[in-house]
Length: 334
Image 1 (cartoon, rainbow, N blue to C red):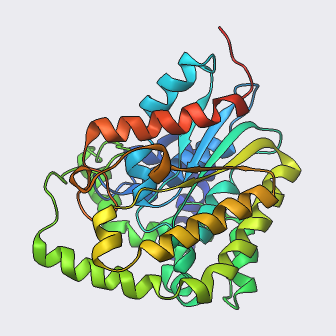
Image 2: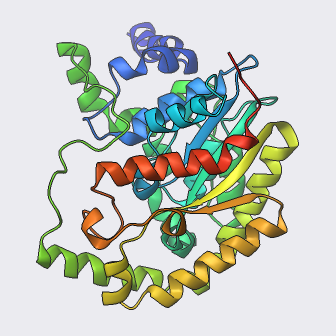
């Protein structure tokens, strides 16, 4: 009996390794089409295993960044500028906070070349220790990050223990998806990968607009209290990236609906945030791309407060970022 129990516990731990998850996780782990946490986790593991001379384009950030930095558009623009060999690793997720982004960046392997497009916003820097503690990244992502553990410890949050066995170290992730995983394995039809949200085809309703707007305005009221935490954590993340790789970081300010800024009194805060981020980037010798300046985006282009609905505008945003950063990539002429 004890031997049987041991085998039932030990066998999955032997089979479900980091390499197994990287190579096969897409076939069984996603909960649904919009399970960006799982999709980004698998891409992060693929990035972690990346070797060779091909440059990488790593993208982190929340849903507002996810919606406007589309791999195909970026790759096409980079290729048009003699950088067609770069591989895009899109690690954006819904509700990704800055500490999540740091965990994603921690997957860039030593010696890699390329650029990291780090999606930022006033909302990202409004999150402080309380929001990070509520996030529970261990249940969201299928990898562990030493940088993430270090950064949350600085906030007074104890990292989850490590055991040196992939399945045990990431057990919360698999337990949170045990039902969908069983269903996918049983029926063999896991939701297909999509880097863009599926099923959103209408603007937010007026009553939702008011509710979301007031909720976000309340969240952004914490910006001045928390921005220092974010800047310090990001500064250390940039230092780690530059110490071990030839990947050049770029800060990309995500779009925001001008109607939201005006109706909920946020224009001054967002302008001050953009100035602060521009100064932060300049002090560290890195590039800052503000999509709100680079691309004309009227209110009609948005689903809601910051998610872009107009496909032509999405393409313009992707191509604008590629055009502003192509010179940072190693040449890959074919």
